[in-house]
Image (cartoon, rainbow, N blue to C red; front, side, top):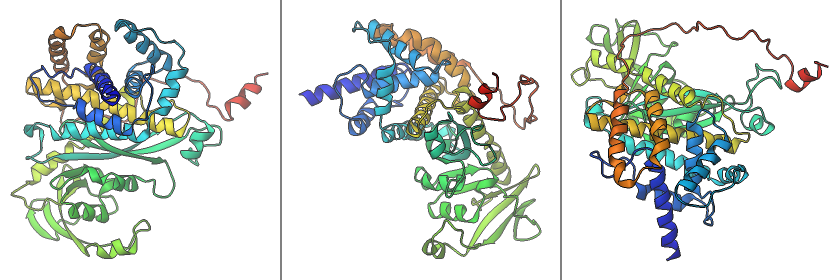
Length: 455
């Protein structure tokens, strides 16, 4: 009986968490997230706890509200918990943030990672068939970096680049993410130090290839256009669409001609790289047949060889959508302000990243619900406009009676669907800014040393 009470309490807390992201079974769209599945993950991976102020679900909810706020402070997160408890008729908690900080430290990393994967996979699986490319899922890949506070622990796990002097730089971590082209959901990610053995984007991508299934298409930039990655994808039944790597030259006078600037060529297996063991290398095929097309000055490489199934123009148009992964990463790093992290230990840094990405997928969930309701594409809805609308409504949802929630959620989704992004194909902008930075000098010695020089 005690166990059932604990499970029910966890389920109710998860429902409360989802309420802020307008999930309601009474609304006329398919179920996006499952309370039962989330409860199962929490009960399996969260530590045993007493009925304290900050059980795992409440802690995660406060953590999400913290990364979504512009303040990002623990004090504000605690204030939100206090306000919610008072609104529910519970005894107020202390305004001291120490219990909340300790509760965040208790959250298991594997719990947050699995929740992130659950939100992404669920969204991807329930995408409308009209959002797919010729009936096939397309998954975007790209890498980025994030910086974090300059603490000894962070420096040890994620050292600053060698080009920066000691005491003047910041620890940097490299991330590689896999995102859905259909709805922007982040399906999985890997993190490593910025430099060192097996810390490059290819090494990180190999650790998350499990999120690809037979029939998928991987879409990436020229950095991923390598013999061994394409061979691995083919063995999984996954097609690739990449821009040609700068080190490889294409000659359209050679190979099997399929059309204008469209041909099949054969690549020969290169020498074994350091990261690959001899057995794996010998098992790989000796040659690869790939298709190269040229469009608007770019050579695009794909394993979709039949021009009747995918024309030159269709492949070229698909590659133009690769830019969306840049937009998605910008939404995560700039709109959600994940480019500069705030936690002071490596474990908390990784948790902070996971919670940012869970929040990102929950926002994408709202966009998918709005798109399903209006019969539009999720990619036509503004991510930032969704956050602005969601933040405006979330402050009120906690105080609204349950019987009135469906009408409020419908109004919220209508407002989200009204924030549309413009369709500007082929748009190109210079990588430059107009506003000049403040003319403060740069630190040339550590801050503590510079402070002593003032006296």
